[in-house]
Length: 313
Image (cartoon, rainbow, N blue to C red; front, side, top):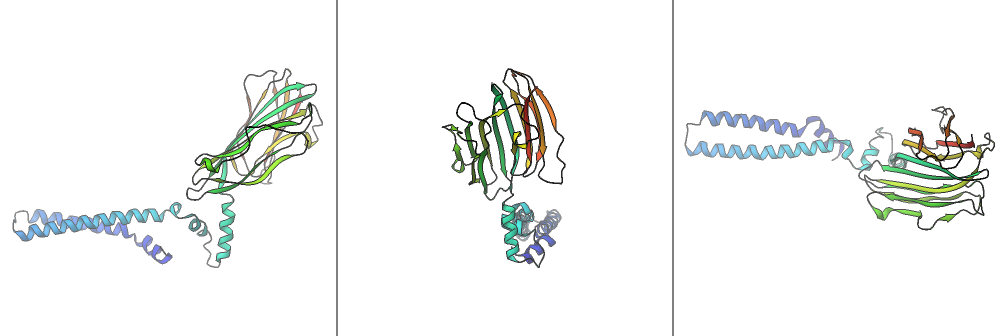
């Protein structure tokens, strides 16, 4: 429907006008029906039948047009391209500008509804501990009519070496909750051992998220870290960061070692709009049976980091 017709349609509410007209006709029919009820001649019988048929017909048409009008007047029901391009309503904006806007919005139509990070500290060996992490994030496609292509991958930064290796990656992948054919699994059945202290990563793998769907991104890995290093050295802080808006971030930790562990943690914001949150400290007792939640329902923005530093008590 072009803009002029759409304006006429919305301004004069054709569906409502038809229905109101039908109500008037129905009232006229009812009055004359009861007024001439005593008349039994063929003319009035034929007239009433014909008028009733017209009322039923126009009522059906009016209801149908009203449904179409309500559907078309809701911007959420327009196709993605029309929804986006309607934002640029300045007559001076040319198609090239609208095309640019459409491409930019496509990059942010997915967000992370929740990110649950679990960290387990175990296997103390002299002054080294094994830090095992599980990160699970639900990425939601905000559009019900187009798929979203996300750049997926993983990144693990080893620290210390123990018994000839720097740790391992147990799982890395992303799964579409509606369409398994979109799944991209990087590491699963065979554990990848880390034999160097270089960053192990895989970047920019394109993965589709179904229309109106979501995907579960997961990473499970283990590295070795030394206790009581220089806290002022940023390299001695363990961190995780988010690539997109994250509505609900949580961090749970558990200490499986036979000594108490001290955890310093903080959120480092990537934007000056927010101040970095103050550093917090938690003591994790030895041989814990249940996890301890350090962060809950935190809202994070692209590039924000959650950092923690491990030391003995």
